[in-house]
Length: 228
Image 1 (cartoon, helix red, strand yellow):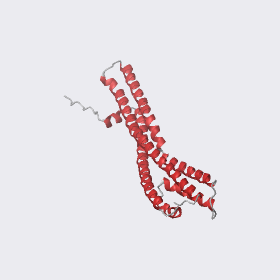
Image 2 (cartoon, rainbow, N blue to C red):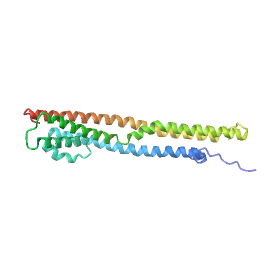
Image 3 (cartoon, one colour):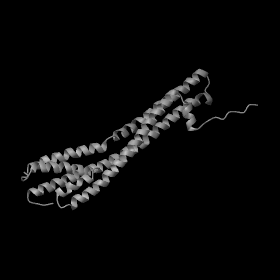
Image 4 (cartoon, one colour):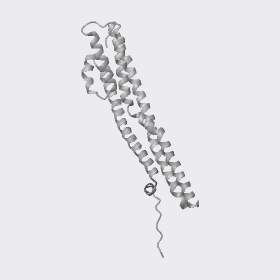
């Protein structure tokens, strides 16, 4: 009497036994997921350091004796978006004054320099998070494509064998389920991370905007004899 073979039902077995199209779909989703996780780690680190160095730079800015002293120290905060915006505004301020009194109309030029620097910094913060949004929206549909393909394979097996028992439909249904799970597994971390980073970047952008107005107020007060 022959010994019955054990049926492998693990996830790895389902993947190995899947058809070529299902394996292609899962490879595509795996690649998207790996890239998404790499972006998540990278953006988490960059936003963390940007937030920390913003706090440190602002502490130096508000406790400094004058903007020249702050400018001399701001290179220590290379990861701070606010420090980068300050450098642009300060350089424009020095260029316009250039040993003479600053004219009131020069404030608008300084404002434009601050806005340009602010836009650049926000763009850098937003870099790559669009991929997370793309993965979050596309991954379920890619998984759904694998699902449809697996169901088609199941119906083809039924047509080829003329039977509708579990042994005939199970391979196609397995492909459908595993690709659906892969699509959801790739999409969930991406959408959660995208929403989190979008919120943090929005907060950083608001901090940059507030600093821009504060710096312009300091410049305007200097025009009427005020001091920082």
